[in-house]
Amino acid sequence: MVGGDGLGEDLEHLTILSEHSVPGGTPKWQREAIQPWHQSSGIGVRQPTNDPHKGELDMSKLNPSETVIRLPDDIPWKVPDGAPERSVAEATLAGGEDESGLYLVLMKWYPGYMSAPHFYRTDRLCVVVSGVWWCNSGPDFDPDQAAPTYAGTFVKRVAGTPHYDGARPDATEPAVIAISGVGPVDQTWVDTSLPPIRRI
Image (tube, rainbow, N blue to C red; front, side, top):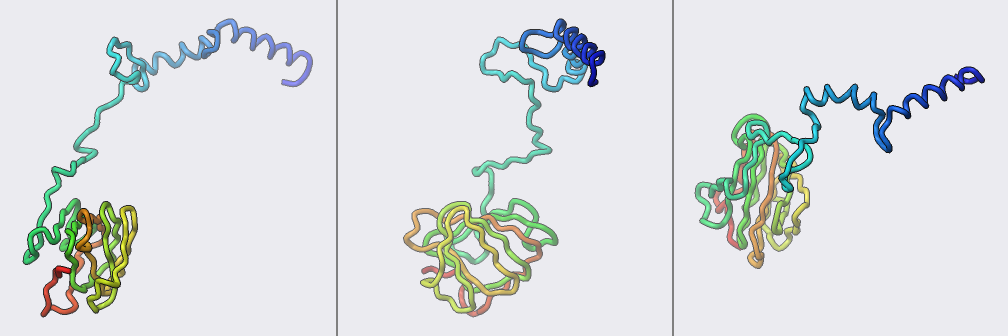
């Protein structure tokens, strides 16, 4: 309130509050008002402990039914039917490429192998996880014209357009790619008379 009398009342009110405050802390009346709620809810309560490795806050533990974690060693890889061993492998993380709806898979291309030209019914959204993934587009197989994509690179394979990809023979590690889209993908090979997996 502005004015002589109002200013005096405000100053008096501030003096009362400061008398109930702790130095550098929250006013005593505020602490007393919120303390019962903290004690009853258990949220953000600092728990006394003699364990130097325990955090100051009593935090909830991860619920595995709400947050599903699969470590790399727990992810099963499968070699596609008809593909040579250690040429390409796939791990399905969610959904399925032959099922309706969203899917998420990991593809692993071993050094020296590429796919033959093919296309899908729906878009493929890809992110290179590790290694170098060599990509090209078109119906003609010409691996020398493939472009390198490195870890962290995003690649979109447009529905209905032929393309091919894999890993060069001089690669020091397999190329791993995370791929997502909407199934069923209806993979189609451009020339079914030739092998779908090529050694280069």
